Image (cartoon, rainbow, N blue to C red; front, side):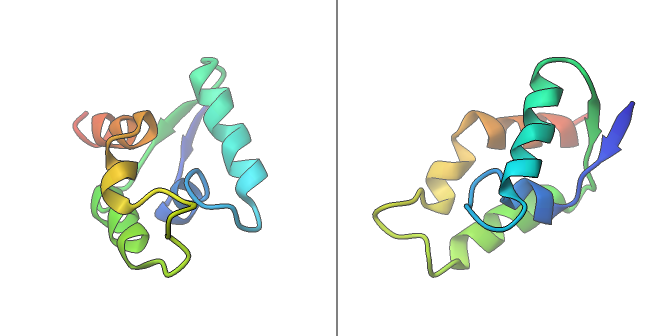
Length: 82
C-alpha cells in the first residue's frame, strides 16, 4: 500500500502537536516496510519553510537547519528525488 503524505503530516514528525502520534506511527510503518510513502514535490520546500518560521522552535526544539540534517529530512529529500 502506498500512502501519499502532505506537508502537514511530515511536520508532525518534527513538532509535537495534535496528530503527531498518528503521523509518527505512519513513519514507523514505513521504516518497518509495511507501507510505501509518496510525497508531493513541494514538500521539500514546505516543511523546512514552516519549521523556519515556527515561533515554538527555540532552544528546546530543533531549528529548520537542524531538521534538514536529520534522517527524516533526508528521507523526505530522497523520496522527492525518485
